[in-house]
Amino acid sequence: MIINNTKKALGIYIHIPFCVRKCIYCDFSSYTDWNKSIEEQYFRALYREAELLADMIGEMSEVYAGSAIFPDTVFIGGGTPSAVDENYIAGLLNIIPAAEGAEITIEANPGTLTEKKLHLYRECGINRISIGVQSFNDSELSFLGRIHNGREAEAAVNMARNAGFDNINIDLIFGFPGHDMKSWQETLRKAVNLKPQHISFYSLQIEEGTRLYKMFRKEEIEQISDELNREMYHYAADFLSSAGLNRYEISNASLPKKECRHNLKYWDMSQYIGIGAGAHSFFREDRFFNPSGINDYIDFTDLNFYGINSNFFTGRKFFKNSFEDNVTDYIFTGMRRINGISIEDFNSRFAADFDEIYSRRIKKYMEDGFLEKSGGFLRFTEKGLDITNYILADMI
Image (cartoon, rainbow, N blue to C red; front, top):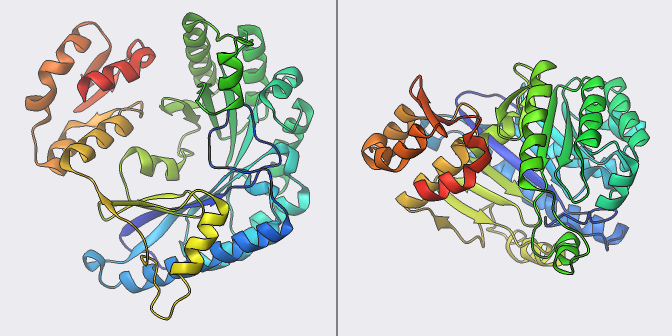
């Protein structure tokens, strides 16, 4: 559903929590134990939340800060959105309001994509697809718990392009146990040869509660060295740059003007609203989130969204960030961008003097070549990108 846009942009995130199989490294809110009945109940609840969101946007467009608000990005993530009936996705996007020219993204697994799904995605307005390839090496994909192989991954990217997608992201993972530089170089070469507009390349983190974490604790696997991990990272950044895909965020590279506009909202603290199980929101300086369990989410919508006086905010718990929370979020997210944070924007947003607060804390990192100031921005150097978490924790 397209609405007229004027001034106040908003991002919408939609969570689809269903997966065919849970990868060994995944700690996201996702579930493999589901059937068509649960899928139908979930989307009934999701449709209701989407309807109330659309109503809220329509009502507030005339009064919010004297200007209309409009969603200029929609991101359908998971889980595996491509694992569910594509008609549910089409029905959902018929409810969600989106500005003309909005970036509308769907995450997809190569093992669940079909030509039929891809064509319907395009017909219902999806214009960007993020394909979770992770690797083109079959043994690595098997170890990670993926349901596709390398050949299917390449076929999925080509199939998406043939369906009319001209904004394709390929997700890759590096640095997992057993990974080596030769295999990583081959994966990067195959990814670039597919000519995507965007590539995300993430260093695998072993998160508590995952199967990978349990394997690590049992000493069934061991992590690669920090030196090899950083070598892989810098090789990828240089290789992608030579192919015209330039980093704009620590783990994301794209062709010019093909950055993920939705993710940029997270990194510059713009407003976004999440719907679905476990979805988080940051709206009007408030934060709120939905129950993460599928049944808990369905019960939540039944209890709060079906009454006579129900609206999008009924039954929600709001958490207003303190000044310190907002500053922390701004720095942690903003410094992920390769350009870093604008000192002028910081001072204006927080009515504070960045240099007065942080000059002593960052001086040593600037002298040692980990941070630099240029053009009114504070950013990490290439050297500093290897210890971002350490520096940010020290700053905060």
